[in-house]
Structure formats: structure tokens, C-alpha cells
Image 1: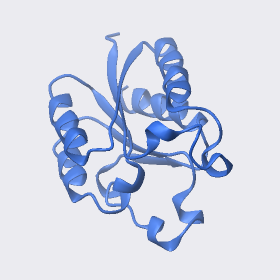
Image 2 (image 1 turned 120 degrees about the vertical axis):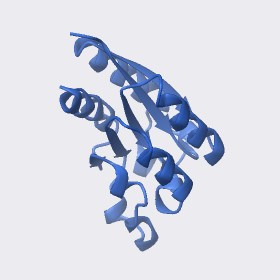
Image 3 (image 1 turned 180 degrees about the vertical axis):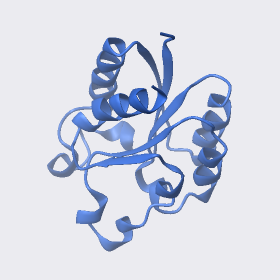
Length: 146
């Protein structure tokens, strides 16, 4: 079986995990979540690359580059979830599976968080499971890839 390459993209403010609103997002850092995703990927014969950026343009460019380098994308867009049509369009042009990921459940929070412009181009959405969602997202894309 060929090894799958997965890109985990993390959007705006996710570099502050562990410090920002721990009552919502917990005390683990993004590095903690990525490490657990990598461990799960290794078991499933996959590799994980990751990028966090507060820049929408950087994320769009990473998605475009992934078209020739990665089999799947897991994306936690942060606040970009709710308004970035540029990220939506970039993901729509990606041929592999896309899993939208959220640490908290946006639908249980403020009304403005209930709309995702990413969901229409995602194969699946994992939300509200904290850091465990990163491991589940890896399992999901590996399963979709077969």
C-alpha cells in the first residue's frame, strides 16, 4: 500500500491554542494536536505535513500547491470558515478528500459561527471533539482514500 500524504492546514489564531480561551479550546497547543495526528497517521501508513497561518493568501497558496504534493487536506480554517470564499474556491479545485475540522462545535456557539463556506466543498466535517478531532480527521481521510 502506498503511503498517503496529508496536509493539515490551520487558520487564523490557531497558533494561539493553549493560550486563547482555554475554556473553549482547551490547554493543548496546536503542536500537541498535530503530534497526535502524526502518530495516528504513522499507524495508518500516512504522513502529515502541516501549516498554520493567519494569512488567507498563504492558506490559498498552500492548497494550490497541495494539488501536486498531497492526497488529502484536513483544514481547520478558524474564523476563515465563515467568510473565505477564496479558501472555498481553492479547496474546490483540489482533487483529493477534504475534511473540515473544528475543535469546538461552531453550531453551539454564536449565530455568526453557524455558517461555513468550507463545508460545501468538504467530504466531511468533524466538530466539537477537541483535539481528538485531529486524529479522527486523519482516520477519515485515510478511509476515504481507501
